[in-house]
Image 1 (cartoon, rainbow, N blue to C red):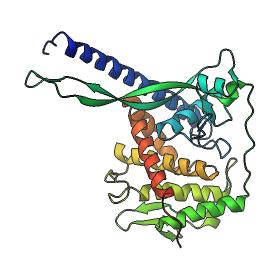
Image 2: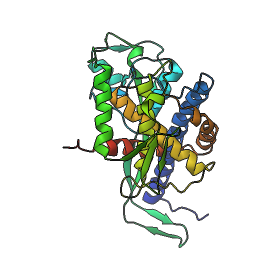
Image 3: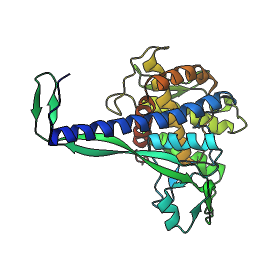
Image 4: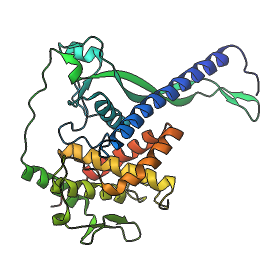
Length: 317
């Protein structure tokens, strides 16, 4: 390889390499945590990190009260499963201190990640052997340690508004209606048919409950999974559905749909039920995650985009 020049460019190049190494480490740390949660869940009735029931909801920040998005939802759900947390409230050391609380001695931090843009003054053109001085932005991942409310002293979880099952079901149905998606009821198999832009879904009465979800919750969890697939076409969220059954692309789209359904269920307050037909994908998901530590980041980002698209639809008049 070409030798790098000394001086300003060389220093920036070193800084960039350091930042990229940190980024790889962050991706690996979070991916390892999610892999551990998936493997542990597979040994316990196929409970994935996103199948923790309505009680944990979408992780929320103690100070801003904003819900986490994308990979941070999955990372914090995985941490909750791995460490046995029951709360969905998280915060940094400083944020808990500002709330008048303290972190218990020996508490282990979990991590959330965000992208930060850094500008490099020079960029090596390895083919031409030249240096271009125009500033170029690069995005690197930054990790922030956070602690769960179960690790905190001097703070109590606020009482949440309890809605009836009927209110929750009505909310879920309103979201579905607002999408104006074509849904055909009947049969024994749930699927999205891209060529027809059609969702096929068994009737509600054919669904059964589980120890962690009711039959109605299983119905809406399945429907939200198919609705996430429904967001894939270019005029919606623009994801590639050309992967054939058994391919990596097919398995990843199923992961996107699993996460999208879980995000929607968490927002509404219903349990995301495990689907027996998706246990076949777990080995493929684990293989992808262990091969590429960015796969879960991309899948979570796409699932978050799909959930936002679905929730952004105005109620029909």
